[in-house]
Image (cartoon, rainbow, N blue to C red; front, side, top):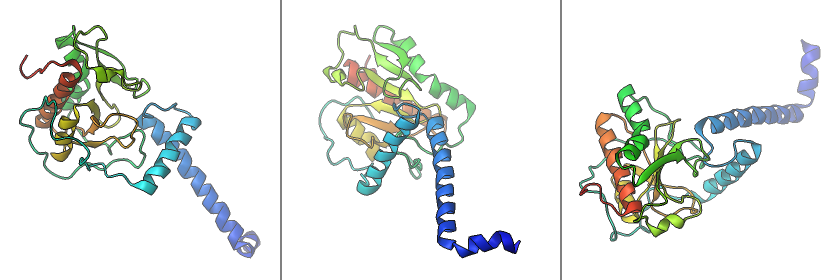
Length: 242
């Protein structure tokens, strides 16, 4: 045993550095696999995409943007939300990676989960002249997105955005959270009342926000109201008055 330990004890700095490098490699491999499992937020699910996400993570650590600061969002303008209640309890914990933007998964009953993940299909079936479902471009095809049909006569001009195009919303399979495109006034209200937070990067409009996963059947109704507001923003049709 002494013969084995002598070289290690004689070079403690080298031994320590080697151990740190080994642990770092193991952590990176584990983080890479978790990143792919959560969905890659539109990045390629390969080492090059992981490297791009890592640079964003380092940038976020240095700048620490406040995900709840809505001071730049307006209090006037179009709104499609009525009587949104305040969310109770603490906000969920988010994973450390800025992309994809995800919360730490929490248990959800089967009925609510099934309804949530069928929500985009529910809207498309109810309003087939306005909406359709196709793979989410903003998520790199890892989720099904609810889109305004390109031939809809009242499509909002903001849908010329090169990333989002006509995407209203999508649900993330890994954690049950959503991204929804709202008017900036409605996005401000959703965040202030505790139902979501800002997107961490300035590459999309301020109305594109993360909506937290519902915790129960009652909160499923709130999520549906928020998606309805997104439909209203991009189609010009207030579903509460339709």
